[in-house]
Amino acid sequence: MRAALAAAPAETSPYEGAILDYLRQHSFEAPSGSLVRAVAQASLRRAMDLEPELSGFGYRVPRDRGETREEAEARFLASRAEMLGEHGIDEFIRAAKFLSKFGQRKSMNRKRSSYGLKHDAERAAGDYVSNGMLIAAALAMGFSAERTHAGSPNAYFNISSRQAT
View 1 (tube, one colour):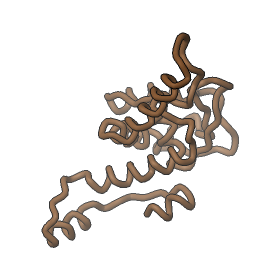
View 2: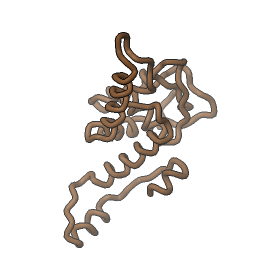
View 3: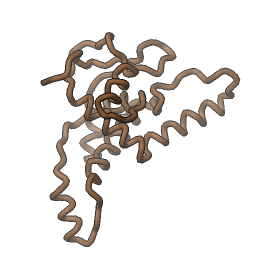
View 4: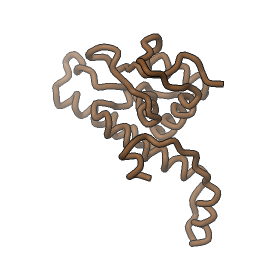
C-alpha cells in the first residue's frame, strides 16, 4: 500500500472485517477502526511528503513578530509532528470524508479556499478540522493545491463547487 501511495494517490475502500478476523486467528487483537486509521496515516504521510511546508495550521507562514527563526522553526516542526498524532488522524479522516462528496475539475476553484472548506467540514462532521488537515486530505485524495497568495497558510483546489449526489 505504501508503494502504491508513493506512486500516486489511490482510491480505496478498505474492508476491515476480513483483516481483523485474520489477526484474531493469529492471536492478535486490534480494535475496530484500526485499518481505516492505518490507511489514513499512510495517506497523511504521503501528503506531508508532497508538501514539506504543510503543518496543521496550513502552509508555513512568516514568523510571528518578536519570534526568532529558531522559535518559528520549532513551532512549525511541532505542528507537523502533531499532524501524525491521534487527534490529527481523526481530523484527517473527517476532512477526507467531507471532501469525498466533491469531484475534481480541470482548473483551480478560487471561490472557496481551504479555510472556508475546513469550516464546512467542521459543520458536516460536528467536530474540529484544522486548515492543514483539510489541505492534506485534499492532496491525499488527488486534488491539486496552490496557495491563495504568497505568505498565506490557505490553498485553493481543483474542487467542484457543488457536492456530488
